[in-house]
Amino acid sequence: MTPTRRSLLAAGAALPFLGAVPARAQRQPGVLRFGLSSFPPSIQPWVNTGTAAATVKLLIYRGLVSFAPDGTLRGELAESWQNENPTTWVFRLRENAVFQNGDRVTSEDIRWNLEQMAAERSTAFYRGQAQRIARIETPDARTVRLVTMEPMVTLPLWFANYHMMMVSPRSPTGAGSLPIGAGPFVLKGQERGVSLDLEPFDRYYKPGLPKLRGVRMIAYADENLRVAALQAGDVDLIEYVPWQAMASIEADPKLRLDAADGPFMYLTFNTTRPHLGDARVRRAIAHAIRREDIVKAAFFGRGSPLEGLPIPPGSPLFDAELATGWRYDPDRARALLAEAGVPNGFSTNILSTAQYGMHKDTAEVVQQHLAAVGIQAELRLPDWATRVTLGNRGQFDISVMGTTTENNDPDGLTNLIDGSLPASYIRSIGLRVPRIEELLAAGRAEFDEAKRRAIYTEMQRIALAEAPIVGLAWRSQGYAMVPEVRGFKALAGALNFFSGITLEETTIG
Image (tube, rainbow, N blue to C red; front, side, top):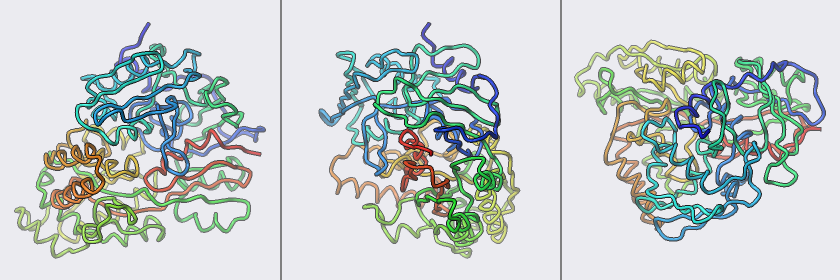
């Protein structure tokens, strides 16, 4: 039976109970014990449920392409791809790519995945991108020709994202079943809320990979316990190293820190709530926050203020003037509130989470600075899974968010500021700025680099005025491990959360 989009999404919402796995166990030869920052709310391949879920998805699933450790695109299910003309991309599938049920990956399978993502009631995070594909042609079992509605220079980058993984149309549809992927590992067991156990897929299309005999993913929601588990030898590798622990890990000869800049903190808004639909109020909030305090309080100095859109220095789009468009200016903030008709401020709430210290600390600094200009904000700090759910439902006024852009191309900003996309906890709710949407579309359709730069410069200027999000701080993002772990790499820049892709090359011993 071929599953429907709805049944596939429902199946992915709950992981299969395949037998309990002890959360703390002795090291087994060749088995990596990975300390996750949370137990994934879902590992359904098309939805966004956070970094811990992404790390697990990068073990089980694969898309047409992915990112190499140096940040370049590399083939996965597709061995090659080319731009046939401005609106047509052609992907050639690998001969030996198979799903974990043994079925060969065919062009019709890719068509099915894209049609489900683009469907009217789809909740896929990349639904908007999939809907920009006008026609999917499958001239033979290994060729996929995608005809887009307009020129699309960035299309290959979409298919490298862990939200655009391909699954078998013949995946089981029963309650609690999991979509069948084509990645290097297969989920074999779990203890809900505690751990997941994965084993190598013996027909993975890359000869000799994966190198590990297994991966045990153990959730430590408390960041201090996560570090303690690494120090005690209960795990071999952890994500989300708390910033206050980085120095001690660097000084410990028995451990190694691998950190990279790229992720950042920012605010989103529910613009259907009182006052937040007014761009002047959102700009007032942007000018009210002294970002150096966030860098100190949340990241122990391992970061830098973010006073504009998250476009890093070194990017061809970086503009020093635009990068400080939301600089700290409490007098300007008060003036903007007065212009908006709320000179004495107003009451609101800030959604964050206590599960990650940097989210909580950031929210507390924002709360303090908003109070200084008259905005009284109540903090709401649930666990991460609840925070994601509330964010997706729009049950907040202001929210603190941490992420990277989708990739290192300027188009990676799309999922943060394009209000035409489906509701998501990483974007503001109820806010559309048509000119931003037009410029984002123009940027991804333009193959001339100079013209692309001009387009994105205009987009930045409008975003500074409309404040669809408000940047807060760049941060260093770290993984820590024992010296016996080799081959794992923290990817740089916007790709840091894709670091799990290197687990197929990782060894322990």
